Image 1 (cartoon, one colour):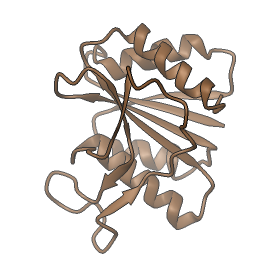
Image 2 (tube, one colour):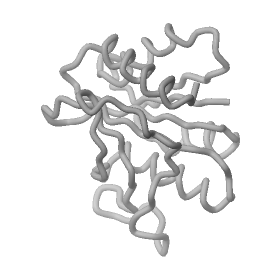
Image 3 (cartoon, helix red, strand yellow):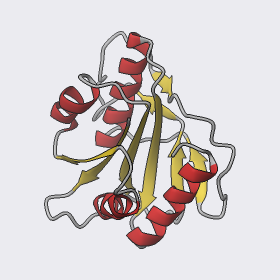
Length: 167
């Protein structure tokens, strides 16, 4: 089973929300759960990550800059608003990325700068859960450029997933 989640603003107009809706159209006949996170990610984590086991978890978040490419994040930091997420846990965790040998560098870039807010909290908490439970779950977190069209981003994510035989 695959989980694809996205953060949403209160109006549902941000790029990760709109891209999730486009991916839902593309993969409507696949065994994929599509979920939105409103506000605090902790309740979402408890309900969908901690209580379920997925083969692949894909997170979508907005880049709050004018960076034009989709960022494939590789690490999460034990930090949320300048406080540790989990005291006495590792400072950095490498995400359990699946093999992503095939991606178009015109549209994607590898990154290790998740920030220290909701996206990072979800990725770090998910990875810590995977590591502590010794799960085989793979995790991808994609930061999406806010000025791109959601249909275009969804098509690039589709290409990434299919070229790497993840779907």
